Length: 150
Image (cartoon, rainbow, N blue to C red; front, side):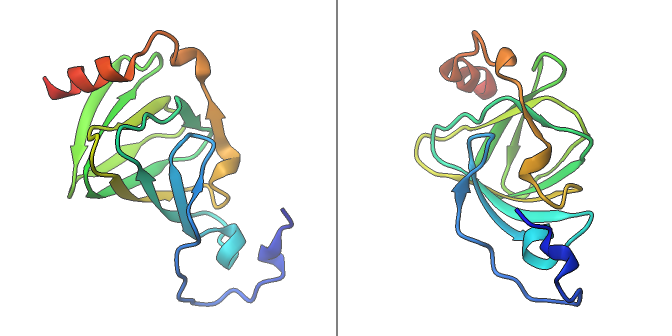
């Protein structure tokens, strides 16, 4: 994609979220503030939705921090060098993911989506995603959901 940030008139703007698409990491993304939409240089803001029962792909955001606010639903997340650590986040919670931290979020519900507002220091969002399929081997989503409920 062309670098339209050079062509944009950088000013304050009201922006609506773009249509949802499946990101590399396997959940639905609706970007709002980005290099592509407003010429942002150091931030990306979007709404992310993990549909019921969905487990995202193990990944990390190379050299970029992420902050999230869970708007609705519940998500579990495995994280750490080998996805050995785990937590559950619910509506109203805020999360922080350091740069280069492997993680794999999933929706705890088989009925409702988990929706979050995400800010990242990568203005292009998808470019810094590094998929880590080797960390997903042997990890059963049903087992994950069972562990999260304990």
